[in-house]
Length: 368
Image (cartoon, rainbow, N blue to C red; front, top):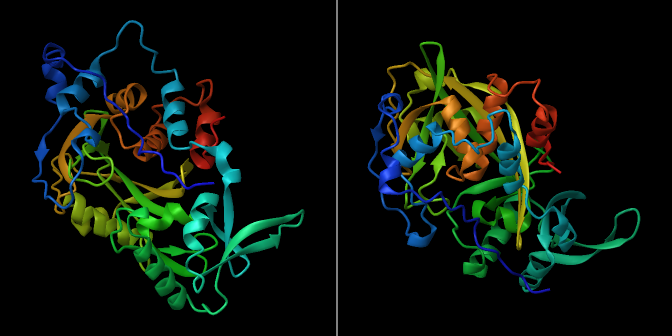
């Protein structure tokens, strides 16, 4: 089977006319504290992939409640966001296990195997018995014993594959049998979905309490980001690279992405994790997002330091929920973390029909 790639998920915002933008009410605008950042050009993005909406569109959709709209108690909009991050489960049979030291660490598409066969001193493709029958699997060549040897060898192979694995960024992810276990080797971040390894990240909801109401700081990604340009994002988020703990990585990202000093970010609280599995052509994303909450002072205003965020706004949590339910403005996996926040802070009632099913789907990625 020939290897193929589907295009990155395109989520088109609702069309907005100039007259409809004027519908946003002054009282809502007063709650949206602006914080503009200078975007630094560090990558080119095709104009057609950039999400063309502005904060006025976000405000309008957050506030409006058309008569035919689903009530807030309807969870279907949230379930749809979970499904968006968990496509392609019916295609799992097209992938074969990637085995290291008798542990399955990833999955490789049948079509992508053809590209790996040329690296005979790096990969061995053969059969093994899974207890029921023989199946194809991928292993490292027997000469590659240490993590360092494997890391170098697979890194050289990825360089040779060139544009077959786009977006390389010289950032290594640790490859283990499960989180916290010994590292078998390290893999270029952009290549993680092509080898189906489990990748980890940290996502932080920064919130403020004023007059008995909760607000979330929301970022709008730079249009020059190589992935999901121009979409809405958390206050702070980032992948978990090799050689750094979750908390240390979060503190670093807080400084770089929002200008939050460590004297403040040290109070971020770990609140659990959400996971998803998404198959897109030859790519098999198996991601775990470690979630954090940070209550911020009302007078705090974030400031982006690394050029990845265009601007920030402080938005009532109930309005953020409306945007997630009604639009595709948010980067898909950010929606999952915010839905988890809605559960934990009482914005989704445990008496709601479907509550437990939606909560379980955030943990397992199963929303069938």
